[in-house]
Image 1: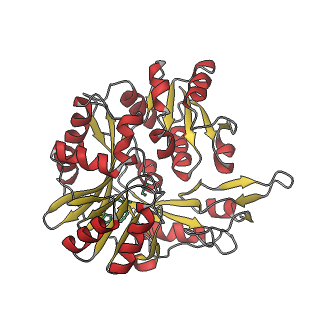
Image 2: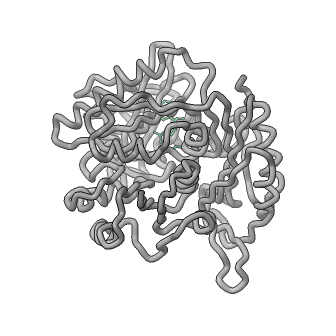
Image 3: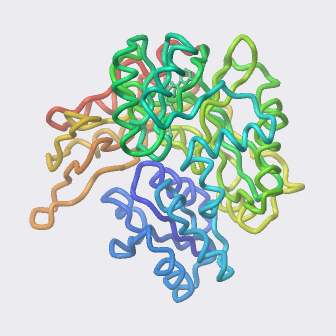
Length: 418
Ligand code: AMP
Ligand code: GLY
């Protein structure tokens, strides 16, 4: 199959690694990709993933069989729409359904219409409304920006003044949602959807805070592991029945079918499973631990989702081992990452058994060819093992071999799992 993958992060690198592991002779192109992706497949650095018309023209001219849209920005910008209009199979929802991620208020409305369990929330447009909602729910306070905010829009805090300051900041850029605090373990569950039927992937847990012990600010995600041995066996079935199918069917009934990856961000409270957010694409870094264990060919699943063919397919199969990923971030991430620094030791890291590296913000220096770190989250080290202890040891052995001045990573990913 000729597959065009849009995006340039570690998630897209993990998707490409998974497609290559099928050994099916796929012809894969990434736009724009990054330095690591360019080592593995062809890249089109000049094709703008946010320009749907250009992407559609490229796909037609080059005989692309499937377009996979990795990140949220092109989804929310509606890049899938001109592709679908022109009959190109595309994995990723159109602009309307991508609002499930792009607008927290839209997501809440769909959840309400679908009867999906979620925290109570109030949308505030003024500071007075936000303050009233904060006081009505009480501490700990949860304030969310009502739009895409690259992982920085959510504040969970016991500090009322900080909650008010965060509300003020995001009120100037649109509305905010003040939400009931939900207490429990977090789970990311990915489901493939063809607009009507869904198929689940293996659950994962993400570490959203910057520092060990879940301290520091929220980030895009600093590490993850999969599977989650502590989940009850009925968990995935319950999410399908109570959350994913009602959501997909509500969107279909509104003539905005969700075709792509439904990311359910969940909290397991003592009163049951609650949705904290939906995303319209694979999670990063959870994808880096979910896809390596996927046994069913990813290309078949994504193509079936893109062409309305998931119904009747068996659930995807997963290997029984474990996977752990640790994210290497630049100094100053998430507020003000230092960029342009040399990145070395990747070959030594990849030489650790069962370790792969998914590049995110990497580029080659044009004159020297040296690898540089060009953004906040630089790469994900991914390790597999028979046990979590083994996967963890490999991941940390590997990341210890990588050098980036000022580089930061958590040392407690998957430390307490058994
Ligand atoms: P989100 O961007 O919505 O995933 O939120 C980022 C993080 O904030 C989540 O991963 C949770 O750790 C936390 N969070 C979001 N909403 C809530 C909530 N209602 N109760 C407790 N924690 C939350
Ligand atoms: N890891 C969280 C996300 O992808 O949104």
